[in-house]
Length: 221
Image (cartoon, rainbow, N blue to C red; front, side):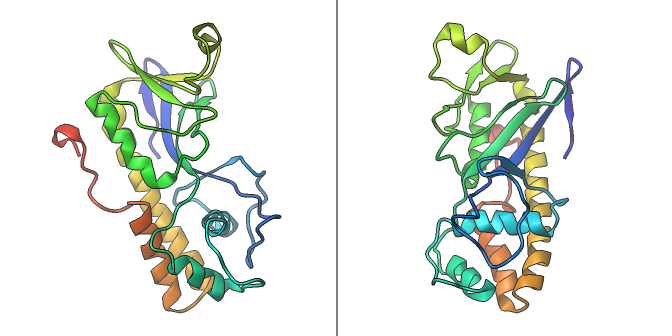
């Protein structure tokens, strides 16, 4: 991931997945001990139990037999027409630690919708809170919650960034996701060492629209 600096401020855009409650939906492999409803950042640096946690986040959206082992659980994922996972893109000012995270019902499969910023439109990023993007003269202001009053909103989380760096930020997100697919493929080969391994990585690639060309408005992709 590349940090982009704006007037001395470092801006990052990261693909994140909402951590599921694995106690309520256990999976037959080790997972990272992150708190439910926190955020797992996806990139090539994810270790095995973090990848396992990501796959657990996929599993909560599918049905599988009671007591299913790794192979049966992966089969349940592969039987789906498309995989979904709660999450999206998190934008952060790393100097201040200010971050805007996806709202409820946002899915990482829609991460490419951030390209709408280049057409002057704010992508849907979830609700409760309801993030949105305000278009100012020289920059974008990403608010954490659009449903607050104007007075309260001024004190709430927001991150400023120039519209011109959006293509570079999205390029970095895609690179992180492609690198994560490599980590997922390696994890899958250990958990289900057969044809399911490659099939799972391909299914995630297809469902999350990871590796296809990043077509941006104005031919900037």
